Length: 347
Image (cartoon, rainbow, N blue to C red; front, side, top):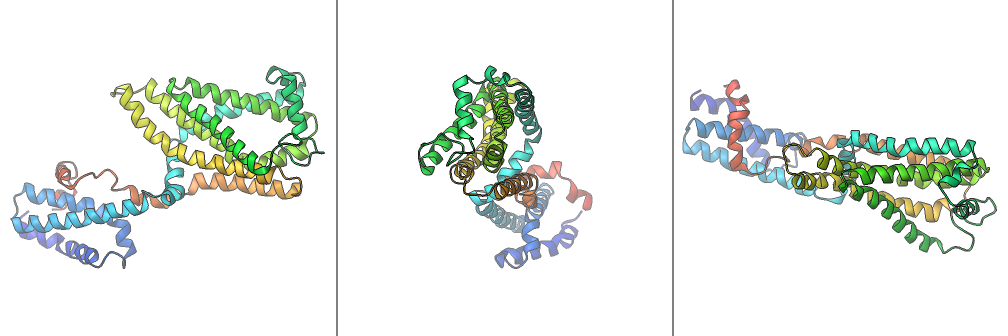
């Protein structure tokens, strides 16, 4: 294609983009959403112009336009991606969905032992003692006695605020051990997931058997939506680390682990926040005996629904923000002329 034909074909799109960038980009939202794609096409056009040795005037114009678009794209990335708000609204749930197979594996390693021990402890009152000592069993029974002033702790225990701090420390400790166990080729994570499943399942089954259903389930349903989900997600992050060591591919294990840790931490940041929320609910909401059982069950069911909806739906509309994430520097994009031949075919 001659240069004049090349310019005639794409001049209108260049002028529209120039006008939009000069105007600040605020007037046309659809153009902002399409900017990463237009940016890539423009880089291809610049590379083609250089390869075909078009005039310096045209190359300079395209280069300036590419640089302006580049600045605009990465300004969007800075404002929208590198913030906690973006992370909470989109980054965290998208990171979880990116590891969905590992999440389901972690769920199975946690839930199946819990289900087996829960049913077993409910049917056999002696099975609980294979997991807990008699003193621990008595302690759990006293914690959920309907006669307690507060639930989930012993009579005369510390204040709600102090318990809030205790729950944060305890919950984050469990999650961190589950996550960090991944560096043992995933075996540590598998152990902690199965162990916690066995432990919680045995408690659930025994407390149900002794008849404290009216206090136990209203207590756990609210904060459990965040706490139990967070444990599973910490396990998924740990399994991701372990997989990078078991199967590093063509990379050295050290490099594979470092890259996997970056992806895993995208999950762990949100997991820690979920555990703080769980600790707050457990200390100030779940333990209260003044709130009606029906209200606790209804709120708990709603929280579970919101957690599932959040991870299933949140961040799906933000995919366009990632389209330019792998375009590191404009000079390197001249390679697009060899791999992205859309401009040539269009010519």
